[in-house]
Length: 249
Length: 317
Ligand SMILES: Cc1cc2nc3c(=O)[nH]c(=O)nc-3n(C[C@H](O)[C@H](O)[C@H](O)COP(=O)(O)OP(=O)(O)OC[C@H]3O[C@@H](n4cnc5c(N)ncnc54)[C@H](O)[C@@H]3O)c2cc1C
Ligand SMILES: Nc1ncnc2c1ncn2[C@@H]1O[C@H](COP(=O)(O)O)[C@@H](O)[C@H]1O
Image (tube, rainbow over all chains, first blue to last red; front, side):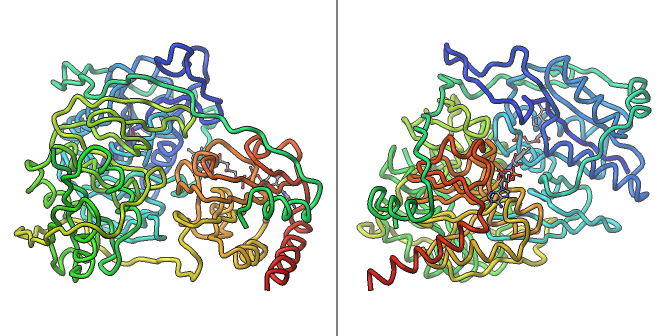
């Protein structure tokens, strides 16, 4: 069985994101970029399934500009087998991404697609669900545990009420939560090895997918900032303030 | 312009997220219909039909739909989607699960987690964990939208006289099957709508120490929240998590205890009216957004807070 894993290149989660002064977007020049955090969990999960003898090849797919190759290399250094880069504008919308993932899935025929539950740049939380609908494969979103069985899997999902378990037939799509596992670090020898692993480069035209955006960004603005408040000296003062100043208790 | 809203409910009660979503839709139309998919949902449908603005409740009431399986709900929406210019659902794990499927089947780009409805095609949504706000215009014919519940007032629960109509739909088999659910049961107010939230972070050090948080929450009739670090460490279950990848809360009072204030946590609570931070590290970033900061060891501060609250209560009695 093959596993297809999607990885998005995003501004690193530790970076304090700044809005451009002309309100056209956020500052991306000279900013540290990394793999979208839950995508690391997706890669890790694929590796564990392969190590358990339940998969034989892990393919990494990223959609964006040339630099996404670095992100693919990171996944290859963790242990994945080969990569695919589909070149596109880095503002590509989940709708188009899902069409590309579905298209690649049709040619690669994986038994499982692992994606992140949410990209931490656009915070859309859409792509896995869309891909599932396009392929008509079951979806297991917000996964914090995946138990592979013969032709099915039991997936534990994180939902607002707590946890839900569902049983899905293969092939299926899971969107991974950060609690799914603890992603490994790539070792130096593996980083070296990853340099020789193949990355296939494709274009959206070649795949026949129209990626014209449907949503226009009219303005990207700074959120209102909160005034820094006061420090209180002890608990008694805090309670007094909450009672008589803020009047919230 | 007619708007369809996918109702969130548990077959017995309407979730408050549905009321906020109707509130958001009412900003652009008063022609609102609500779809209720579930099992034994007569009382849910009846209740929604009396809400302000509601013209019609479409009910698919069938044992097959007892559990919300996205692959089964999506075709139901698709069967009626032609009739509407907008389809809204709450941006909860329920709505997030279903709506992108509808969007892709309609070949439109979904707009997620909307915090402001500017016009029938323009919306504001947070990106980068709320570090930026995007004003976006949809150029698709139909708008598929998820609404952040805490950003909108709830619709009035009376004043409407919608009709309840049974929807004819042949139930479909899905390749996903519900197994079971583990819901946290508690008598406390619900986290996403509570007036007061007391949250604990890694500073609590153990599940057992979380009792200190429970005690304060009991005295304030508050809900309990947590940082991702506290959930990851197993102090409390995942449904307590506040933040970018957890819940968004906007209480009157948010008390953050032993939480450093990472942007991913702030994404879920920085709109709270009053924020209190208790942290032993004076430099903790949470103090930058707190209205009242107390630099102290929580193991001393929380028992003191508990007894101060007792004093207040006894004065009031
Ligand atoms: C993609 C992504 C998504 C994320 N989503 C979320 C999310 O939704 N919600 C979320 O919360 N986090 C989220 N995180 C994690 C986030 O980045 C932080 O790691 C997390 O919020 C830290 O939790 P914390 O403040 O409890 O722990 P820490 O950062 O370890 O802080 C603990 C604090 O407790 C204080 N403390 C320790 N002992 C005491 C004491 N005795 N008395 C008083 N104070 C004490 C310390 O001074 C410190 O400030 C996410 C991260 C990523 C990468
Ligand atoms: N440009 C992209 N390239 C590769 N994977 C992507 C891309 N955009 C989204 N994804 C995948 O879809 C997941 C959810 O993204 P989103 O729906 O944008 O929140 C991410 O965690 C990725 O796994």
